[in-house]
Length: 284
Length: 330
Ligand SMILES: Nc1ncnc2c1ncn2[C@@H]1O[C@H](COP(=O)(O)OP(=O)(O)OP(=O)(O)O)[C@@H](O)[C@H]1O
Ligand SMILES: [Mg+2]
Image (tube, chains in turn green, yellow):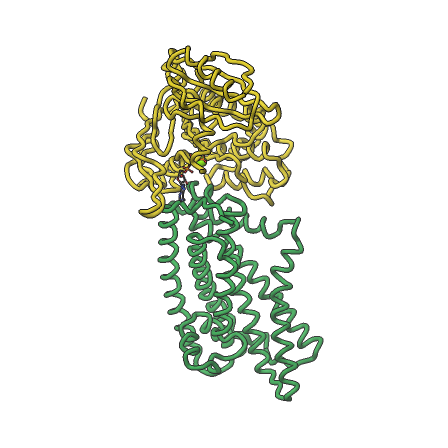
């Protein structure tokens, strides 16, 4: 497919995503989806930690920073994966346009990429807002000491980590899109399951070393583990392994995820045409 | 003129061995450039399946299909550049976008330069009489206007071949007529486009199509111009019989000797059933009438009539569309 066709498709999908998100009739839904929900998650985890640790009088600012960063950047992941998981269902069953996109000269693959980029922008927004409000509430209002030197962040490393992570989670989104093409009405369940697994084993609010050994094995196989590790290295300079290894493992697991996503998505597209799933109606 | 759309022994099955459905069974048709070709058949005949294969949405189980000389299986990319599809009774785009925004989005999937896209959507909206809704959210449109927008979306890319899957499904008579005329205009005068239309409305096939293929249970039973198909029935007597009951099961008339086939339409408002009966000899009509009277039914009128495409179908299958559908659902 010609490069300009690809660019045009991606651009149009981004435009559409933007239109859908900022749909004026639903500003409330937009706010809830991108702000309230992620923030609520953070506040819940944050307060539980705060209350729990003050009761037994072991509050550690270091640990709190660990949790804040983990939670905020995990929201970035969930936001990307969730939005990509909803996409196929919405376009196929709700708007009934998937088949018209599919049978146009633009490819569905690039269309999905465009919508994913849109998801990345939204996810970044959520991330910044959550982080910002988190600091404002816990440090600014409650006066907790959060030992983050915002000027000391290793920006190049953080950028590299974000780039790899984004590639990885967009690929994961393609896997979910592929599964959604082949099934119907599992989109909610699927993204919930996937994000729960990542939450539990990815070292979001506690280090994976606290998991039982089988849990650690799972954790070691997940790119999210290395993503969060690398993020913490570049922001908190927390030790416990070295940065290079973490980045390398992130690259490796990302590569594997990309490979899997190409395989799954291609298989799904083939199956979709073989079984006529592109315009499948939902059976109730 | 070359054949523009062609299928060769096209087969498509669904399901596994025990419940195998033959949606298409050795379908071979060829459509010429500039032709409006109709596929007429009852529910479940295989019309949509054929359209899905030709529009690259579905792979055939066996056989070949070509659109403008491109193999739909192997050269889907080439096919997609020159086709478009409009289906009846569907949402024509994103409900949350305005009509104009929707058209813009689809025009960009086809890579139209923005001036062309704008100019063309404006003209289509004007021609199909919905420019007053250009800035209305698509979800707010009524069924008829949604369908106008659907057609506009299909024509926006200026396809060489337009596929229409029951384009007037559920529309009021006037809107349906407007859309039909617009498609005829588009195909015949303006663009010389080729159209493949599926329908189970007889008049639609009759009014619009240069040629019609009658399809039932995945098989093409006949294919010719509506005139020729009906001409073949000239010597077969056909009568419209009005009976003042809508409750009764009329299948007992099948037993009358000399009856070729019949169809029934029940009018709930008037309480009258219209039977369309095809026989091999005029004298059979009297026989039928007496059978109806024997069954304590009041026969309001018996009138001989000209053949329609439905009669062609009855001749081939022995039943009208509705009866065939009832049977398929039973
Ligand atoms: N995805 C599918 N899975 C299983 N069976 C299918 C599928 N699609 C179609 N069929 C079956 O194939 C047959 C032909 O269906 P098709 O939709 O092509 O009919 P149609 O002529 O378009 O009917 P209608 O007038 O109701 O639209 C039917 O028996 C239908 O149940
Ligand atoms: Mg159909």
